[in-house]
Image (cartoon, rainbow, N blue to C red; front, side, top):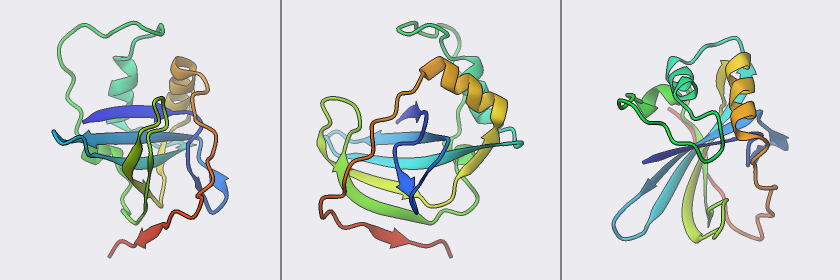
Length: 144
């Protein structure tokens, strides 16, 4: 699995784009890709896992982190409510491969405003512009 962050978010929910987006990217040996997209909103809540990722992130584009592995439990990067929208789309970075299964969480994860600002400084504005649905069906699953 891979973590990618985008500032601002790459999805709009009810016409609103979140402050940021975390994408949990999963692939298998057949080339299938599924992405869980978590909207991020600036607030007062510190997320220790996100802070750990930011603290160990390279500060210069192209730089790599060298050091001991940092433990990241992705469960702690998800909001409490897990309702989502699902659709078949593409990767948001070139080559924009089609056939990606997207699961966009309906409810955002609140993260510390300072941490989100640091993330924005590390990444710059790196969100793909919103794309038209072009008739793609979007299904909804609600949490129970």
